[in-house]
Amino acid sequence: MSNNEIFLCSICNVSSGDCPEDCKYCTQSAHYGTQIQRYKYKKIDKILQEARTLREYGALGFCLVTAGRGLDSDKCEYIAEAASAIKKADLGLHIIACCGSSDLDSLKYLKKHGVDSYNHNLETSKEYFPKICSTHTWIERFETCENTLKAELGLCSGGIFGIGESWNDRIELLKHLQILSPHSSPINFYIANEALPLPMQTLSQDEALECVILAREYLPNARLMIAGGREAVFGDNQKPLFEAGINAVVLGDYLTTDGKAPRDDVAMIESYGYIPAQSCH
Ligand code: SF4
Image 1: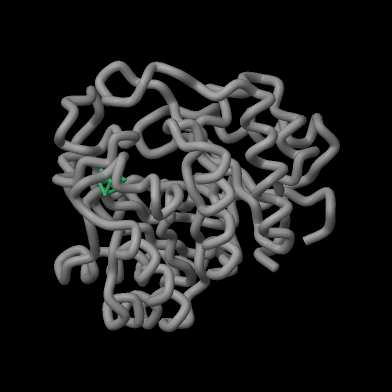
Image 2: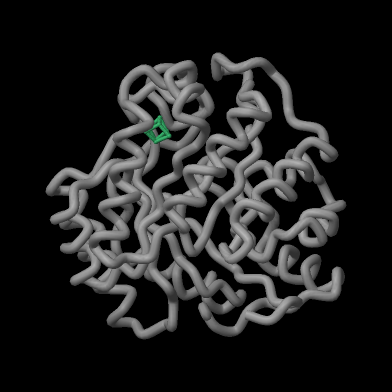
């Protein structure tokens, strides 16, 4: 990718809500009664239709996301089926799966069926994680990232900022990401939600930009992707994010919040003097 290219990724929430885990920042947790759409296993035809549309808007990445702690055999089979169908359609998409904790064999199975990368975020530091989640451990997250690398899938791993963590937690998160060396690292900013147990606070633009600059310093070669919270923190003034080192965006909608229309995102990026990347490499 050249310096003025921005990689466009996209998310397809293929199984949404009712997650038994209690991550305090997550609207998909069943613990907090958030007002979101809940459904299990979107039809493969519908997934294919979304993949086609997002590809037409310039997305190169397409991420199949399921809520829940991890990849059981049913879910693994379903994601493999969806990935095979997308590959068969030959859209030229890099397929990412994001299905929580996973063992090595399941990840190898996904790779065999067309998945190119696996997304699993460390989210925050090992020390702070127990304060935002009591139902699984940070180590389990780290081990899934290691399994991803062992399965020879591309690793996409990042975190969420603005959940009450300190600067030291941010640095510890980035140091561990540096060890894993993900090819892609999503940066999320917490979106305040009254139903969630975290304070109703959103990072300031200055603090969010400091997080991006720090992430770029620790991950100089990663595709640094701005994901959730882009609009909530920066509104229509997103140029500073790209100047701070962001070179990938999630196009369109997020998991449970609406983004801009994909065409508006592309127009905005072009108005800043950048162009959508034409290939994954
Ligand atoms: S495991 Fe994933 S889907 Fe479930 S509450 Fe945590 S972040 Fe949300």
